[in-house]
Amino acid sequence: MNRNPRYRPPSIRLVNALGVAATSLRLVDGQMDADQLMARACRQTGLEDFGPADFLEPLRILVECYNTEARLNFIGRMSAKTYLLQLLENRLRVEQDRKEHPAIARQQIQAPVFILGLPRTGSTLLFELMAQNAALRAPLSWEVMLPSPPPRAESFQSDPRIRKAQRMLDWVERIAPEFKHIHEVGALRPQECLPITSQAFRSIQFHTTNHLPTYQAWLNAADLTPAYEYHRRMLQQFQAFGPRGTWVLKAPAHLFGIAEIFRVYPDARIVQTHRDPVRVIGSIASHCVSLRQAFSEQLDLDNIGSTWCWLWSLGLERTFKFRREHPELEERFLDVPYEDLTRDPVAAVERIHQRFELPVSQGAFDRVRAYLAEHPKGRHGTHRYQLEDYGLDPGRVLARFAGYDGSTGKVSMPASVPPEAARAI
Image 1 (cartoon, rainbow, N blue to C red):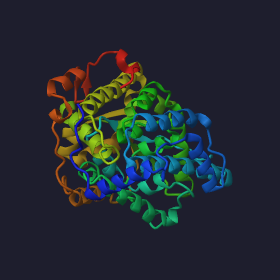
Image 2 (spheres, helix red, strand yellow; image 1 turned 90 degrees about the horizontal axis):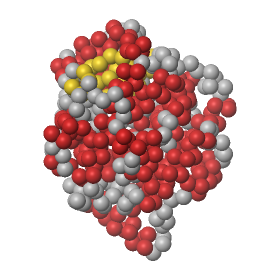
Image 3 (cartoon, rainbow, N blue to C red; image 1 turned 30 degrees about the vertical axis):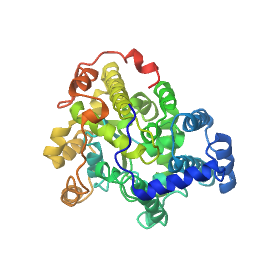
Image 4 (tube, one colour; image 1 turned 135 degrees about the vertical axis):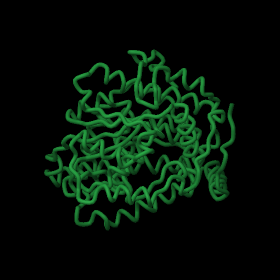
């Protein structure tokens, strides 16, 4: 059943209405074309080399889905086109940087720490706390959004791109005002890996922001190795002349690519967060709606609920299946239940450092305590949601995640990925 979004600012409704008129009068183009986007990116940068060609297939599928499935409003079309163009320009500039600075390709990314787990399980909080240790290196939003030229250590906190990136993030907040209640963003805040893998055009971020089921079905069956190979190229870009340290990285969607992580980063360490899926799934669906409602006039809340319930159970099973099949790597994993993290965040961070023998900068844990004092939960308002809003109930969620104890991280899930993994969502 289709239902109207809960809220859209009047200014956004006005812009969309004007956009409908402009499109009907053919003053603006309502469709996207992958070849035209690439040609425009080349014209605007004066460059032609996009790097590895494995981005072409997902880009073409993605563009077709934007045109045929996403049900975009005017702002949605303009936003998608602008974002794809930015990603293509980034690829061109990053490739040129590698040619001009051979030191970038020589960078060694050693023993990175990946934080993963179902969304809404405390992974963002843990990521932010780990980043308070100056001996660790987390990617910041501004460098992920605008990676070229390579960041420099001497201007890392004052680069002009910081202001530009913040303006871009402020615009997102204006069109999706509910999002800050769920996930706080900022140009100088640590950034998760989805926007990095998006530059390989293999990322769940696209389907989170827009209704792109055919693209997501392709992604579910795709080899994610190219995404992580490009992820490594980006870390090399950030590290070559920027601040150094052991990389700490985060994205719930790493659940889907755990095998590829170890293929590209054989010495990776993994922190997996856990929480009761009944508490998680409604929040995930609400997060999706808070983004999609800015870009589409048609939201099927029941579809969003069932899709994300199924999809994240698939991601969780992929990681547990990998862990079962690779017991020799189990010492590289550390499970952190949500209740443990929220009860004593400092102890959770200390436990991770001890387990993986991570370096600790002077005053690191004092900064962790200061961060917690300065960022109390709910300071931007309460995130309210109900499973019933998305056609779900606790029994249905528990049935999908049968065998998973989110309070402890223990699992007795099936030993194989469910057969419906191959179908479109």
